Structure formats: structure tokens, C-alpha cells
Length: 199
Image (cartoon, rainbow, N blue to C red; front, side, top):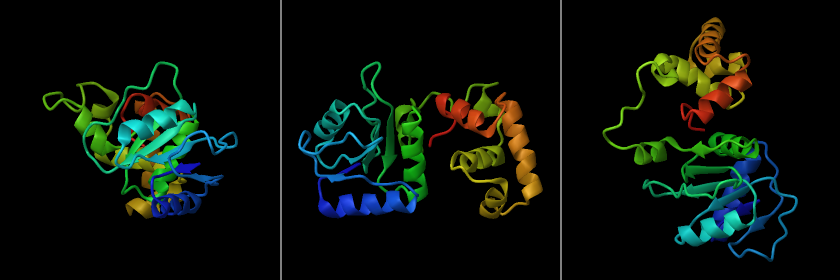
């Protein structure tokens, strides 16, 4: 389900979601209570100008939420314990990125756009502690991991990154080994939970 303060935003979000292969069951303004949301698995919300109100209203429905915002300030990561999964992404997200965020929160994962990760992390905190998974993964392995998170097969990853399929297989093997994962899905889950992968 899509919720945004303006009809053009709602229509645009709905089209992006459909382009990523998802089904939009309803488009809602920002008034809770009037629109049934029983059939929705995830609520996608453009927070508009009244972010606190939009976030509180969305959280009250008890669905996993994906919030979109333009501001690069740290988002409200204050959901109560036991609340449904949440994602925070920027308004300039692509259809693939938006679709990946929706699928991730539907699976119970937390999604945080890299722009917000930088805003949340203190300036003097290193991006990766020595010996951490992030420190051990190379830049190319991180690129491959991001493509795996989008659900792409090796051939598609190779085309996107401009490398051979054999090289992709090599990097996938390295990622699985370094994350101690037995499958691609497990690697993405481990990476997302550890903050290594911002979906």
C-alpha cells in the first residue's frame, strides 16, 4: 500500500513499485482509519512535510513500513521494541532499490539508505572495525553482494558490473566464505543484520 500527501507522489510511487514487480493494493492519502489495509503486506510512505505525524500514523497500523524522505538528517530510528520492520530510503531511489527495500522489510529486515547511515554514524567512528566482515570484504565483493541482494543471478551481475560470469562466481564464493554463509540468501541476511548491506 502506498501513502503520500499528494496524488502525483502516490501515483509515482505506485508506478515504481509496479515496475519492480510488486502489486499495489491501494493508494492512500495520509489519513489513517478510513482505508482498509488488511490486504497490504507493506506500507510505503512518503513522509512529506509532517514527518513525525506521518511516521506515527504509519506505525500505528502495525505493518512493516518503508519511509521515503528527501532530508539527509538522521531518520527517526525510535520504533518501539517488537514493532514491525522499517526501512528508510531517499526519494531518489530507483524502482529496483524501492522494490528491494519493500521485499526486505516484508522479510523482517531493517533497511537504511547509505545516505542515512553516514548521517547516523558519528564522524569519529571508523566505518569498519579491524577484522570486521566489512573490513574483510573488498570493494568489488561489496558490489557483488549488493547485486545479490537485488536477487540477480550471476549472469545479470556480470552484465551490470562489466565483468565475466566466472569472476562473479569467484566473488560470490569469497563473499559466502567471508560471511560464513551457506547460501546467497543467508549472506544477504547476515550482511543486512550487521549493517554491512544497506538495502
